[in-house]
Image (cartoon, rainbow, N blue to C red; front, side, top):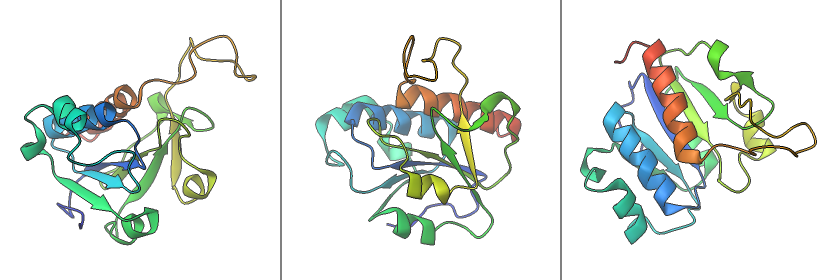
Length: 166
């Protein structure tokens, strides 16, 4: 399925999502903010999964949804004018200081493994949400990461606000 709204000022993409309720919640956020949502296969569930639909409630008709056979298929369909912004729990620029641009694509990784290095390397930027209560450099002492749907909502809202979409 091809990307909808080629001129969208901001879009969200999920790389191989695994948990239906997370994807449903993200779809709901995308519907609320009018952001196109791309799902990059393989998915950890069926698109018609009951829990996916339940999490998105009756908002699915309002989601500009596309699915892609893999990361290469997704990448080939991106608009010419775009930046791929990988969102990761580590090793990125801080969300609070990052400057978004029209055409940005917010890419979120799998719930269990995040974005693999080959995908991270194809991103124009990697973005991290600072977490004062997060784990230390050794991986101990706090929260490892935010829930994927929460992270997506935070980044999407801040990006859209910066771009004056709302």
